[in-house]
Image 1 (tube, rainbow, N blue to C red):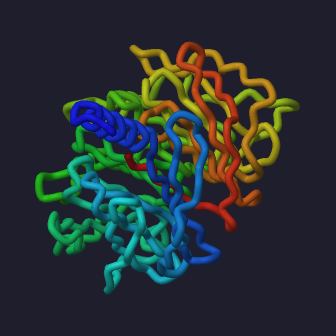
Image 2: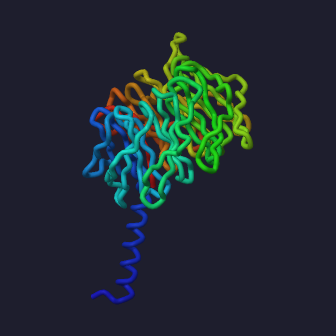
Image 3: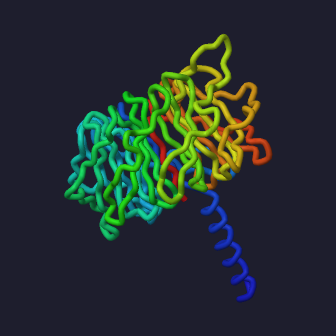
Length: 363
């Protein structure tokens, strides 16, 4: 027979064990256009391994390209480039998704979605319309309402992706066919005022924008040049100043141009990682100067590679794990970051069934 004291201790131990197990997991969502779906995974924060959640993938609209999750963890949004819509999903406590119809209308070919840090506004980058759509988010239902002054022009051709500063004050969008970056100040209403007019020039084929956790530095992957551009951000005005030596080249053999597709800054703000659309050793890393933001010597990572045609690279919520979406391998490559050196170690390879185009991770 258990005494009342021993039963109490047992309950406390079980509760503590459950809480510890729960806190060691995150949820990851991956969009896969060829089956018009979002696959959900349970992510082990300690090992970097992914296990698919029963019931996923969840149906989206045609050709999903991007997914973002509300800070409340109650809602998720997916851009459907093949039908010019945004899907709203309710997120259950176990990470399962349930779509709420009807879908919101966007401009032509929404390539990506960006949400402000407070979760008040959603921005849809419409590649074929050369515009940015702005939507207010209902805190109770998650429903979207497009602003009367939306969409806003990008002043560049084929906007593809962008990023908002951690302060929520500025938005920057890469215009792929204009070799430029458009910057906006975000108004209290969610509206946009251009702060880079004309747009800031970068390398050819800019495809991805990353901002460090401090909000001081911005980086752009230039696909056609095999380079990446670096800028400092004025915290008051949002104006961009090119870093000394920008654009920066990735070290190559035989002067072959590597088509850099995506880049990300780790959670500590110390390291910058890039991936390319090629095959083989297509993952690169640099240390970041904390004062200037300039990428220093490349991180030596012999033998470290993701799968083929790496389309994106993201961090988890802890900033200690890196994931790469491999579009022709139909896989996700998971890496741990060595805090002292920035060296990456491959810890997981997970099949996605179809080519992954975007990934969002939540606690």
